[in-house]
Image (cartoon, rainbow, N blue to C red; front, side, top):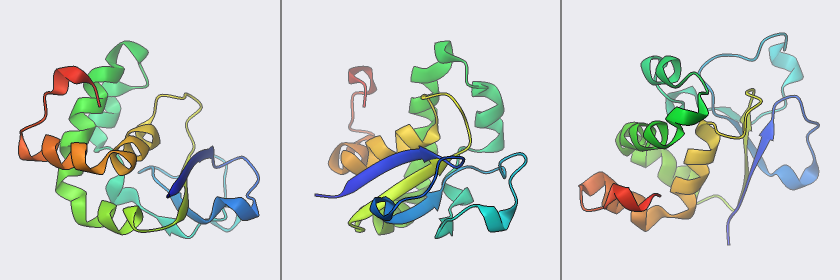
Length: 129
């Protein structure tokens, strides 16, 4: 079974992290590129600028953000498929809140068949993920 973790970029890396992927569009404030130990900056998987600004980490908008972000991710299935086939990955975020894009990516990877149905328009989004 694939292990998927989410960590803040400011946390120390560990051997158990596996392949470390930074999944935000904007570089973390105050961090030099050489200080972030990562294998990939997947900025194309991050929420669009418009969606990120609309959400603004407002918990009241979380469910709608999840839906809209999954719609965006439907256009990135090939990139997600590559991540899905890796054994051990850590999704890195700079944001403090626990409701962020990495959570949605993790849900998508862990529920791939449901995500594919969602992208095909056959998923009932009222049932959550």
